[in-house]
Length: 145
Image (cartoon, rainbow, N blue to C red; front, side):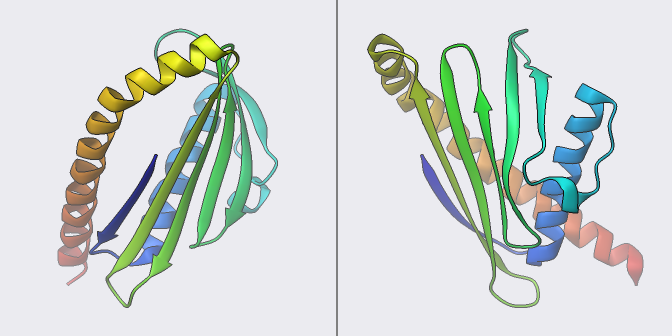
């Protein structure tokens, strides 16, 4: 799945929010507090919302530009990348890419079928996240004045 969104916030603001979320997740799962420059190659076990365990490995960290990770579960391998491009002071483009590779042909077939439903939900979630982030940024900026 690939999703491209223009978001009315600075690229560094958006990227900082992604990294904050990742660091929070790492701390909740491991008790460790790596600094952002230590993220690339960082690997940890994670308990998912459905109770299953996965292994997360941060595969890319380029400040204000790219954040990517690989997640291995018992059934699937996920590769996720956030590519951020500044379009000016308060405008950016996010290119989100996600690939899923199942451990078997039947898992891949199930992923393909469920991908239609999940893809629609994810696109709605991205639009909601975009609106929320823009709103948060406007609120933050109005408090600075």
